[in-house]
Length: 218
Length: 314
Image (spheres, rainbow over the protein chains, first blue to last red):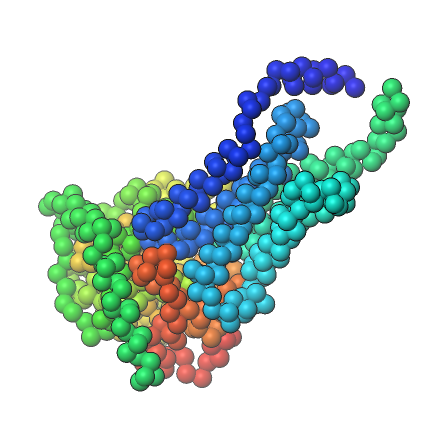
């Protein structure tokens, strides 16, 4: 493939500064710390609980989008951030935990009856919770030991569930708003583009198997 | 009930006290002074003279800052702070309200005249948003019935239709490529609902002329219905025979009915309406309170709906 050599050049040109992974976590938690700090000081507007709840959910979605962008960035632009993907994925999970805890404790005041009714009757809650449940095994297996135990292929197959989680997350967002405001639509478009890219690529590779094997032989 | 009440009242009267005196509220008061001082001489800007009303609640008011910085007015954007940010561009003087349709005396009223010729009342009402939050707001206005009587509706008039200003050049939300609603915003009431003494046309809040973001210069307030029924910045009121179309009903008829009476036992299809969060109460640790039928105004309005299935006519 003639794209190869420019690619290598690009790789050579684009030298990542050696950012330690811990820095990604530290920076990633800044919004949470900031939100809680502002919340405690009553600086989150008239409806601080709702602001916190929504902001945490939005950050979970943002980290999900970042996580899903890492592969396309590598394949299309030769920007390799793979070593940070675990951090961004886990940050998505941590924000999802904070979002859920805010809903359970601050929003619903641990009113189990109301929460149960929400879960059964409100599609956006059902979908949100299901999305969270999907993220749990992904977070639990986001470590080297789990990859070793499961084997790379099984691990990769399990982690494809992140695509389902991404769809669940934007559906959850779309269903909670009135009418069709732009923000959830923009996130939906981004997620669909990221998933569509993968689908398109895998279909393309399937139909062009022949040239691929030729390439391999060469 | 008797046992419950005291325990319900005590915390809600103690905790908000600190909230009431906090920095935000003081700043809100200061902002209000600055607002009033910003328009010296102009007729609409002086503080309004009002009389008290027996319909007012004695519940703790939601702070002015919260009332004027957190609301929905989609003509200025969908975010809660968008109206306060963008509504300055709306030109509210001069302003006329055209009253037409099935009336004996169609007329065009200037808001200044309406204010001059009405006895303004302070009406402290609960406001319950369909989204599940609530406020207590001291509106200043006059009974909608007063205006209705002036135009002498014909016997054939069964409904009252309202329309908000439709000015894309002054309302950024109307310039959006993907409109959130069909503009202009329209609402409606049955004539007997409109005649109910609780229904008012508000021209002020907290004793000052309405800030633009709250629907200046004149808006409907029907406190027993979800907030979206209380249409803002009214330019036209029409008396009609058939039930008029309403904006949110047109947008999602299974979610927003024509009546839209506050009703804890009829959920929004996507969320519960059993409880609400009172804005300004408790900050991050806000406690939900039960939502009351007709937002606590059943005594005044329930008879309007006797014999109606409120699950069907939500």
